[in-house]
Image 1 (tube, one colour):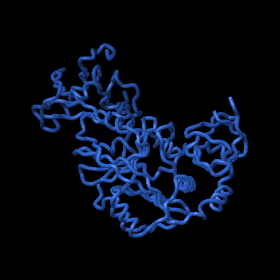
Image 2: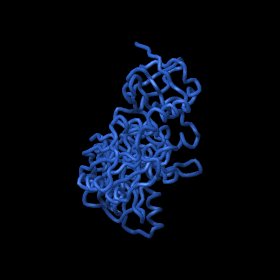
Image 3: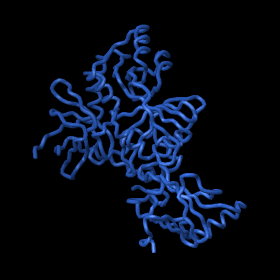
Image 4: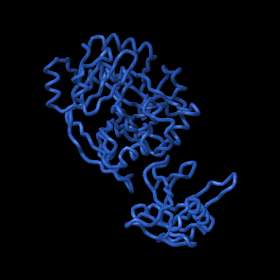
Length: 297
Length: 115
């Protein structure tokens, strides 16, 4: 077994370093475009109720229809996928999901027993990640989005917008925007403590990863609720996301341990010239001992 | 008793039958049966459904026990084969209780299970 010394900087130091070296050099607002994002439709008279029963958020039909996120968890409360959805009417909603993995569709289909629900492929759209220092965004973007979500951090805002490619071209022609590289986009997301849930990640509770806003604590049972609600109510969430810096590349879901055992795992990582930075999930009790040796396993 | 239920049926205890009949009487139903089904939901993934209905649907398996007709949708039957349905009342009672040999795990309240 190889052991590696991982330098984990304190939050405030790292945040400042990151700001100085990266974010301040970016021209914002900027966008990153990913083509061919699959959108699915959940249709049938039980569609809304079905998604409500198997995911964490309260899925209800609003008069003013908005997009949101909901988490598909297993019965142990671990994330299987994160769905971004929009309710169209009482029998239809559209969604896309983080992992872009057919296993999620298979998982959902396995739960359709007596419900009047069908999941069908709807369209392939461009996914726009729109980063800005303010919440303001051109109405053209929102109006042309099938699904739109806003994530906020202390210093930045990120919209995720799913738009038909032809409409995207029109919008960009109206008001040209700076286009980010994949690496720049990843840095911004790391800075905002956002990560894309990958199917390679396992055994992560949504309360550990900043997804609390997409969990309903008053709607009653859903798959995984027993564990998630207990962790929340008894304040037993044991890990949280922090930044890390390393001189070696690690894979997402790699675990690391200290002298007390497994301490955390890698959620995202990006190369920044001669070192790597990213997000990891770490036991809260280890946060005060961040400069000790961590061994990757 | 619950270990001996063959997989081609489900069993319902006399007490559970009586309770169903009592609920049906309260609803002033003369002809009725008990629909037993499962659907997605609950903490463990699949939740039980119990419903007093007028009669079976086209795709229901019909089982008669203790003077009560039980209707089980064929799609749900695979999850319920061999199940024993009991009823316990009183302060510590759980109400209707499913003892399902197909369930690998159940949630704390027993209303849902996984296979």
